[in-house]
Length: 84
Image 1 (tube, rainbow, N blue to C red):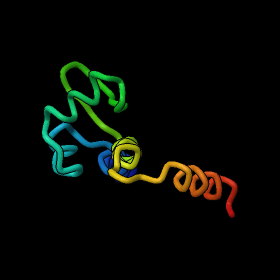
Image 2 (image 1 turned 30 degrees about the vertical axis):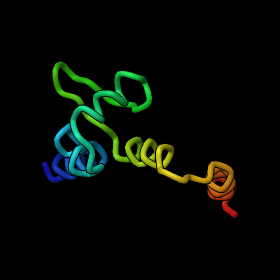
Image 3 (image 1 turned 45 degrees about the vertical axis):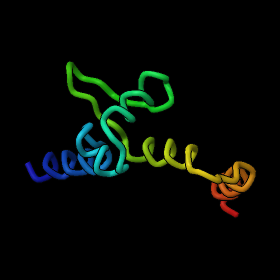
């Protein structure tokens, strides 16, 4: 039972409901829905429940950050992946 509870807790830390995603990003429900509808933001749906992975929200927000230096972001990501 403890292993199951730990697994559920790990999943809950990675995924957010729509309401939690709004708080996490500081964006309105409509803004998140619009990004989903345009295919900009990855989401998971089970029945009526919509979930967002925190890493997907972080990546989406970084791509839409005002004044984001794309070349710097690419170089930083490549260095991170290559372990430099």
